[in-house]
Length: 286
Image (tube, rainbow, N blue to C red; front, side, top):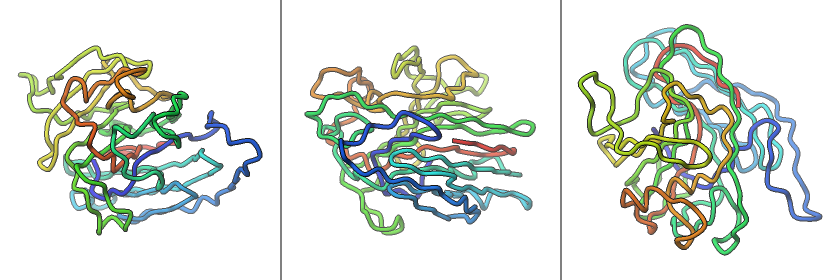
């Protein structure tokens, strides 16, 4: 869930992970980031092409004593490590989506993207993977998810600050790696109040998913959740584009364009990954 969007193609390669190899002779930038902690509702912290966002869009629904703080702990080339600690009290709605994003490769049409992530054109078919390793500790019962969050639009978004953004979102795509007592947006629910999937047993990126479909009141929302309840994918490595579309109808399993009518002329205007928190207290380390 995002109210301030401005980017697209993202390689989430936290901690010690396999990043795309640099070109021979290329200079690799190393950073020993001082872990400055940010706690403001809309605070941001940039490190190279990456940016940490404290997107506390539901803050008004929280009670006194709530907090959400985050920091970038290290950054090297296409790898970034970050952490967030949050405590939300009161209300039933989402309070924050603290996340990391990459401010580069913005606003390509889905038909022009080879893999997610990559820095190449669609004629370069070398497999690239988005890798995300994370762990979470919590106190008591929490309501939250850990997820990729993507938005598409009929027109490209703006590279200006988010409050000047153009390219209104038409579709949100979430890929939940963990569900902690939360639930996806859905157009229908069963008698127990649980969301009904529109498709089950979908094999993508080495895992099996159920797909949920609905609307957030502004745009369509598709949410992929692990098919087995309680599954936590704490180490994800795969081409995120397999959830969306394909390269020239070949090579990849594609889902939303083939089965749900997502147009390849859409622009991918936002690609982020983080934790969407509603209540309780937890620390996510990536």
